[in-house]
Length: 90
Length: 186
Image (cartoon, rainbow over all chains, first blue to last red; front, side):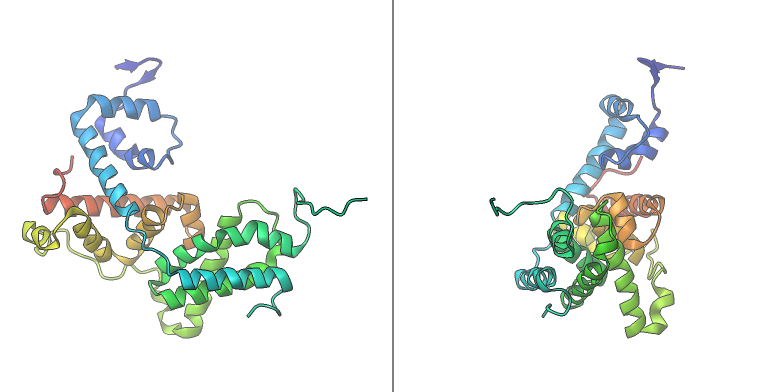
């Protein structure tokens, strides 16, 4: 078995399973360094990661601008609640 | 003796608690409500009802993870409002809705040319995802919620959020590959 430092190298299947949580910074497996090393070394997995990064960047840019009037009404409603209780809210 | 206003470390009154824990989350609540309802007016009504319920419960809230607490209220409020409006549809809320065959001939290179760009094609494919998949993508990838926050908003385990999200992204990725916008899958 190949070792990476004190830790075993991950194979493509393992990286594929962990990749999306890794990209979301939601991985809890303690394998970030191993995943990063694999993505640097493996062209296929590196390309896969880049594809998902592009998808995530595109999706993050699709957040529609909020209707400001609605947001203002909701903030006013919230502040009226805080100021006077639920009887005072408009 | 001075009478300068002070900001207590732990808010003691309902108003202070509401100002500290709830008001800053209104925008996130509204974004999530829009993702859940896909309707601006319904989203506003949903957030207003959520704020009212949160105010009534604020004395019992310990201040830990206010966003997750509020998202849980919003989710329950949304379910209740569905029951009031259309009781016959409640049982369908957990369904996957219309699904698409992975071999759908509509997804092809010509479609990508019509869509015009990677971004436009991705939006189209996001709209075509089954309801549960599309919702979790909108909450996490578009609105930026964490897995735990999305789980609170949807009333499902974090593991289910991860599973739906990762499967949904793979569908998007595979659609993009079929249309020539991404390399073929591993």
